Length: 168
Image (cartoon, rainbow, N blue to C red; front, side, top):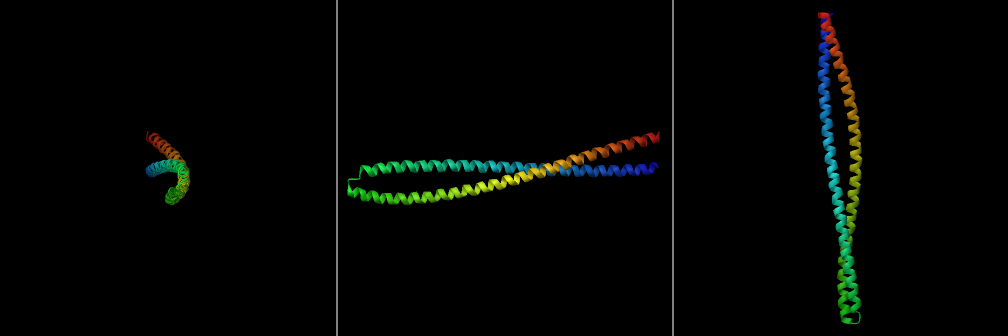
């Protein structure tokens, strides 16, 4: 009977060691997942900052173009009586219009880029939420494993105590 109890005790100890090893591996996976989430959060912050910087740059360019356009309009009104100057001014306006169209196209491309980055951020946010749910589930499993391990350790302690009592 003692031999059976010893075998059971040895088996429980082996199970405890395996459970402990599984718990350590799960904790490592949890730690790795948390690091990955932190890295994704940092990337998200960088993308947000880039979007904000691009927005400010675009606003500055638009304001500069608005200021340039106002100055140009004042110059056109001032020189409206002189035909030759009007012709020269018309050519200048055509060139500026082309430049403004180019800049408008660039702004539209940047707007598309911002929209794509927003989509990326949304996808990243969804992925982060899914990762968080996975982490929560893993944490729950770890807690259950920990409880199971503690119960097994308690069982082993009780069995060792009983074995000691039987020896006495």
